[in-house]
Amino acid sequence: MGTAIGEIVPRQHISLDALNGKTVGFDSYNIIYQFLSSIRGEDGTPLKDSHGNVTSHLAGLFYRTISLYEKGLRPVFVFDGTPSALKCRTLQKRHEIRTEAIARHAEAVAAGKMDDARKYGSRALRLDAKMIGDAKELISLLGFAAITAPGEGEAQLCHMVKAGALDGCISQDYDCLLFGTPVLYRNIGISGKRKVPGKNIYADVEPEKVILEKVLAENGISRQKLIWLGILIGTDFNEKFPKIGVKGALKLVKAHDSFEDIISQTKHAPDFDFREIENLFLQPQVTDDYTISFGAPQREKLVDFLCSRHDFSFDRVQKSLDRLEQRFKEKSRQSTLGAWTPKGQE
Image (tube, rainbow, N blue to C red; front, side):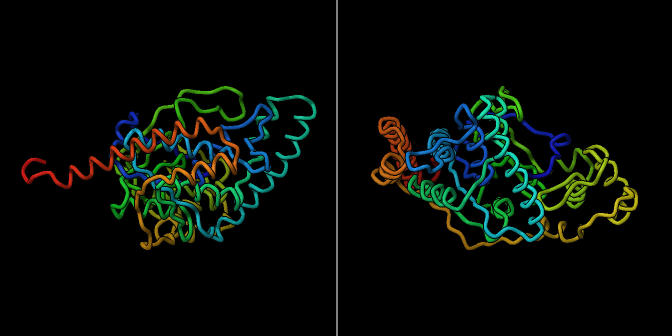
């Protein structure tokens, strides 16, 4: 998902403590897919409850969000709304890949090839309406905001950062930079390690901070040209131009002041209107009709949701809720003390 411009993106390694006190927005679909991909059984299938409902994403959201909240991060979750018509081809391609992966996963399991089963199990992942609804319900019960965008969740996130409602957005996708987020945080939703694609090994990862202004300055391009670069190497809304890598794309956009000239240089006639994609990044469908609020966790309802409905460990959930409630009380006291600090003693 997203555009593969990471090779030219300068980034700063940070600690999670750097997010203390910051209100940040999660690209919800992105982080849910991370949890679905990483929290799986030996055969590559996601965790499920006794009713057959997928719970990997709920486990990730519950335990990881509480850990991040303890670090002082104030999470807001933004979900995709209606996808752009420009995304239909990409969605169809993903469906075809997933259908093939499901068949190969079944073959691998039957043959006892667990490494292959995990590989194809990851590709067979599907996020459906029930899973999304469960995620939104869990987030709300935890006391955090779950906002549904009118269109692309990434676009709404970036709009909220630019408006000052959020201090940054959290996503693995560099498309957020094309949508114009001033600040992008990566490697936040996972802890310490990430599975290497296609292999049953894990690599150490560190939280990262990416500043759009620095990306543009160090590469000597405008945001519009960054969008052109993304179009050349492929986005969620178009196939990449053949035989062009990131560095080649950067060279092209720096050498030309119109995308028509770039197209003529590539000798490739795209079967899409680049102006529509450019406009989608520059003027996406977003809204200012949202509310960011933080409430007390609803303990009894959380226990019912997680333990009674989805078979989570009662003891482990209770211990995590103890931590969540303790941190919420601390934050509430800090807010009250801050409100009553005498002028001149802030």
